[in-house]
Every structure is written in C-alpha cells, then in structure tokens.
Length: 256
Image 1 (spheres, rainbow, N blue to C red):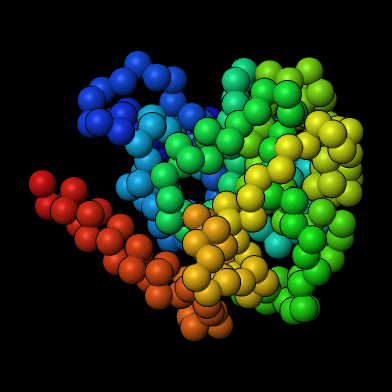
Image 2: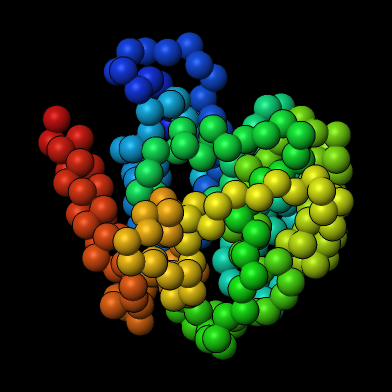
C-alpha cells in the first residue's frame, strides 16, 4: 500500500509505547486531497494511542493488481468500493478501521477503539438515514439504499472468519448492495457504535444541554467546506479551523 501511512507512537502520558498501532484506512479521492489531510490531522492531533493512517488510493490498488473493476455511474468517489479491501490490506489480522475522508475528528480515537468487542465481525454506526438532497459534494448523484452511511466508518475485525470472504476478487465483482449492506454477515455479527462517532452533518442534531449528542466525529456526507457549494454548511467553522491548524503545522515542517 501507500508509503504515506504515518505512525503516531505516543501514549496518553507522552511516553513511547510498544502498543501495536491501530491501522486506519482513509478513503482517498484526488478531488478531496485537502479533506483527507484535514481528516488525518484531526485524528493524529487528538490520538493518545499509536495509529497508522493509510490512504486507500485507487490508482495504487490498480497498479498493484488489487482493484480492476470499472467505475459505475453511481460511484460518487474513488473509494466507493475500494473501502471493502480494508481486511485484506490489514492482512486479515487484528482490528482495522475504514473511514471516508470527509470526516473531522473532535475526540481521541482511543475512545472509539475502546468500544471494540471481539464477538463482532464489524462495528459501525447503524444510521436510519434517507437523504433529502438529490445531489451531493460537487454535483454527484445522491443515492438512497438500506443501511446508507453504515459503510462510511467501519471497525473491521480483520481476522474474523466471515471477513475472509472480502478478497480482492469478491470486492471487484460483487454488487454495491452486497458490499454496502454487509450481506456477507448476519445481523448479529454487526456491532453498534453511538451515532456521535459518525455524526451526519445536516441530519443528526445536537440536543441542548445533552453532551451525549455532541459529535465526536462529524461526517460531511452531503459535501464539506472544501467544496465551494458547501462553504456554509453546519460545523463548517470547525472544519475550517482544523484546516488552518493543519496548514500552519505543515508550513512549520517545511520551514524547518
């Protein structure tokens, strides 16, 4: 995979740790490079556990013979299907995470990792979501299907026997319904995560005086402030602040 995976090997008390990093695979699309960088930055900045962040780049997967399917008319991003290679890219070992690049993390990823339960094959936020818009991002068609957005952030128990079904051959030939609805699994093999870890901008709501409803990660699923049409979406200010912070730190590294 990409050599861009970055390990952040610092524990909560600042000491180096031998803890194995949590592999986080982020969906990458060249049109949303800035979104990827800001998502990555937001995870690393707040993480008290070691993480390795790896962009899933379709061009690299094609070059390495792992992805060859033609792009369908309803694929709004380059990672619509490549995301399901996560267990394979993790060598079918341990827990690994996939997340779309249009997320902003506001909490320590350790809190999410601590929700892991080995009895499940995957864990995700189980949204009941029907979008109102017909388009999203930069004019892509907004599709409606059962379990929509469940696959946008998933903790994969990569070594679970059921996930060994997700070979490159299967990911390249199976339907969107089979993959996005997790049809290789039984319902009781899918664990549930609180919605605040995949808080859908424009759909989920913060309830006043209820901290349980405040997002731990915001998903700009309709389109984020990196697109001109979505510059004024809800929580745009938080994303723009994170972008500025990322750009300042990147500039400091260049100047060193």
